[in-house]
Image (tube, rainbow, N blue to C red; front, side):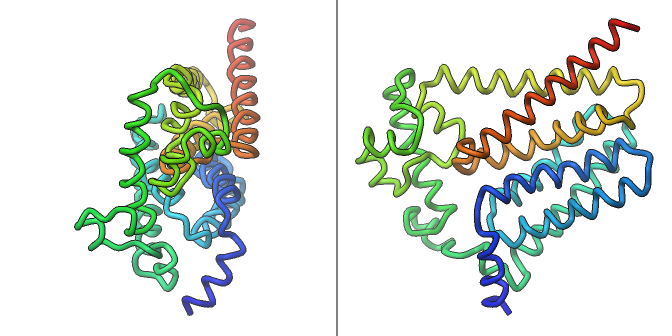
Length: 273
């Protein structure tokens, strides 16, 4: 059973589709708590479940962790107390289901492939799978960053390979398995600070606009709810891998531009009364 499911999951074993799918999972949350139409909620949740299945079949741990952690973060969304509680319960149930699948289902071997707890306990991080490789690589990349906090090697893995061949050889990866760490390595700490400020401003404007909406069951209300939840999932997912690049970064900036349009449209409506 495991081998058959593994062959099937190979069709989806790409990091890019799993990251796209997070948006549609977030859409399910956003519509569920913004729309009053039962049929619309049913359609969207069905789509979200299909995308959740794709994420599970990708046997990637980072998207699963992102969804589970977002279940906690949604408690801070500007919904009323009842909705936040319902969202937390729904997210917790989904998180529990995903954890069960990752640990005890027939495809659990795919999730836990190469992970060796004994190697981690003995400090042999480089030989203990993906989790251990991160524990091994993070300190080495941080050590480099502390030496050169303001001078990056240039954008792209190719520049890291050329400028830091010894570091790449030690860690086994031409990236730091973290979007913020990668940004510092490539462009300096000032760029990482600018990115964090931009993210926080997105959250701030999203929260404020949602609170000011008189009707949450509207296209803008649904999109803003979805976008804020997706932001949580996206950056949590990117904190465990090098994902903010190529088509993923393009997808992110397109959604960010539409988010800005929604916020500005709402502000203009308020000015016009």
